Image (cartoon, rainbow, N blue to C red; front, side, top):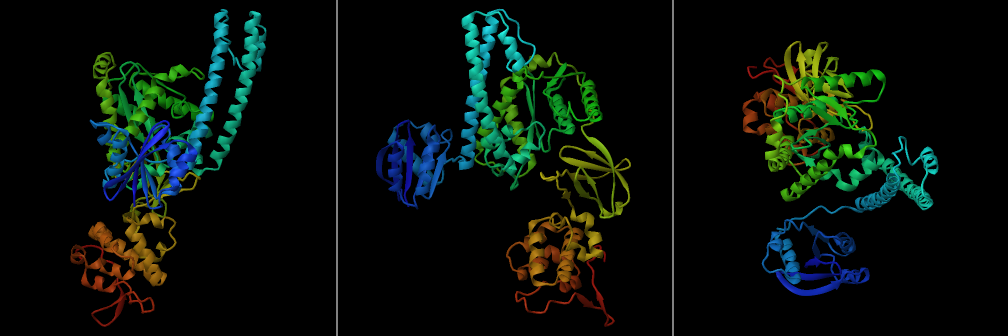
Length: 607
């Protein structure tokens, strides 16, 4: 296998071929499509190519990809051996790339797939057409301003606006110029409409875009822009799972103080309240005005009752901190400039920090929170003097925070839980029939019985297609399953019931080797054991090592688990042998008087 390092320039590329740790060949290839294809055909399918990110690296990667095993794209900011080298030539840089890749020290970047490249080209074309429209409109307004004509109070570029333009007292040459600009505007507007039609059709055919379009204010163009920017959302996991989230971004226009808050749901009032209050208490004061766009959490334009209710809550929130609520005027783009520009800078800073970090995977949500907070803190440190000067004129904070949650009353139904916002939550089965008071936060639910806090549950979200979801804790329903183990077979939330993946795989293997009745009983007993003895992790470790059901028989041989289980229970729950034709063990234990009775899992250590 050869490793090919390529230092790319505008019109040529310097190539260094590494084999067995030695540069065996160096050459220069003109960056012309036919010559680059001819060079790619000289490489083997086992070879690996490494290049740096530059303006035409995407085209080079696309041409080389079918002819080699892999094309690695390096982040030039992190290749310190090149960026800080005293000797810098094309040959040296190409050889350094090859050697770093061979040693496994090359900081790579994610390479977009063809679908993402297609979206990016499409959105770039749309941005160019939109820029033309803006330039044409600007020239038309400049002509009017030069002739002391006040701005038109309606939509200047509609039919009424054009009729108004034709009636203006303008010099003949400028009137002719306006007509040419109007014709050009109509032509470019048609191009934009054609592009938007294609973008909308692609968005309707893409489930990821449909999911984004469920967010209020996100159109097909915005959804396609997001997908073109980030590509595959699965690149950003938390503990192995992609994190669907947004950022609440607060900023003071003068001093540049910023605060970012991770929002797991949509643009809800709870998310707005929590993010705004965290920002104010972090700042240490409150401004006299709080401005936002037409945020659905603050200015909801649904039916009249909903609109009034949400507006009153937002006004009450601002009144608690002595702020005057306001929002941007529609169509006046510069009023949003103090946050849109810095918001783009923050997103780019996060993207750069992820590149420097080398991975987008985080152990848990708290680690990701800390990552975002650290980035924002560094940005605030650059503006420390201005922040201190503005903090003096801020209003004092009230004695306490106001509520950053919604409170609802729910009733626990017979399945041992309640449904809230299309999500079913389990609670201890002893609460069946009780009315509970639930405080709904952005990321959690606090459940109260009267004035007593009972439990905190993670907040769930319904599926994008509108189907219900479940947040299930097996500890809440295990007592009911002990009485009816067969209920496990057809539980709607069975996969959510298992606390770890090892339990789910164990149940699948048991069903392959045993009748459903015996498999359900053994699985329920294992869950009961994990609950009663507090050995959920140890039991999962014993169930994990192999894929055959016989290996799960060692689950009850762990020292801690064996000490906490009665001997009769362990012996009565042996798992089936490898041979599927052998007779499954009986789940009955001889009684001391010679009778048989069905043995249940122990209820407590004292038993």
